[in-house]
Image 1 (cartoon, each protein chain N blue to C red):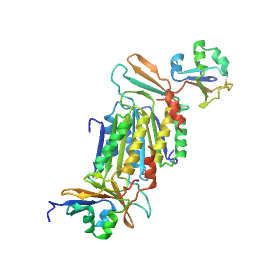
Image 2 (tube, rainbow over the protein chains, first blue to last red; image 1 turned 180 degrees about the horizontal axis):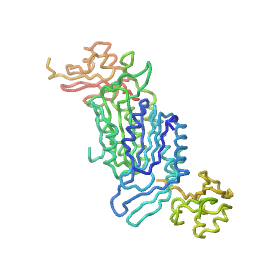
Image 3 (tube, one colour; image 1 turned 120 degrees about the vertical axis):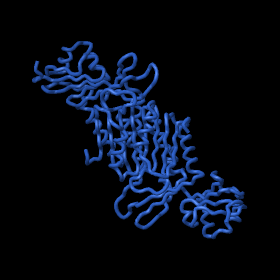
Length: 153
Length: 153
Length: 83
Length: 83
């Protein structure tokens, strides 16, 4: 959607957050501020270590839902640009999962837009997550926090 | 301050936000989320275009003040790491001015810490700014917004 | 078996594990007839109150009667994982 | 002129432009004596109510009496620019 200035991508392969941020920043010289959120697979030592994480999506709904969220975010705040990248598939410790970046003339808009997009991505996007630990694969249930986060807006 | 996990730098030369973010991210594999704010010199076309921006600091106070802000930010939220980089000197359109990044286990802590640090950097740090336009250099006065931003916390 | 003339069920998240498959081609018709032909343990999970349904990518309301036509895709969506 | 035996005034932001210099070596003593020896137009600006003072890097309170000793550095800080 080049006209809307929102770039939304659902990726089955790894990506480089630093490269994506450099490209996004270079594309928005008119923005005074850029806020980003990077979510990555947490590296945790010990018995509860997650060896792998898998995110499943549903082609008919996941990307369309992300695009609707991007449109709603851009409508709510005055942004110069918005980037939403989300992985699916199997990931390991340190792999990036999600990158959201909002470019705006005013700092407060950029912070609020990135925060809003993340709360809704986490609580409403059509992703199902399972984790592999020493005891095998386990599906992850939603946390009460997710609904509380979304209710902030 | 390697022990506190806060890196605070006051730079007279340009820097690469993408490289800084890549290094910071690689240093915090235990963090699930990293929020960053990048402030850059806005490129504006037309008669009001800013040809150059100069930030002056005061050696006896500016960096010590940034370090105190970093310590206060780390004390207030549960962070794995905090990065604050600020430029001084003459900059041109597109040049990075400030980069703040907060790494945390929980997304909300990372957002709040970066937002808090930026509000205080902008309203309380010892920087004086002047802009060069077609009509010459002009000192920039504080905006009422800065005090309102700081009063949020 | 050709899939022409059929509809499709899609099982997401843990429902895929329970079903032992991600998709199932079914004969079009009222949903209750389709579910009646499945393993009852799976049917119970599919009708769980936290499982939502989407027909051809559009979420359905709680009490909508569902009749699948040829080519329809009905997805069963357990709660998303958040995080 | 050697700076030994002297104190220093530091002018920040627009005060540097008004002073025409960033720093000025002065004879130690009470601040009012030092200001009295400056260009009156500059002295008025330095005493502006939005200008704060810092002695050797530490902010001073509003009505603190200031007496500079040898080697002291007194900075005049206009409001920061924010943004």
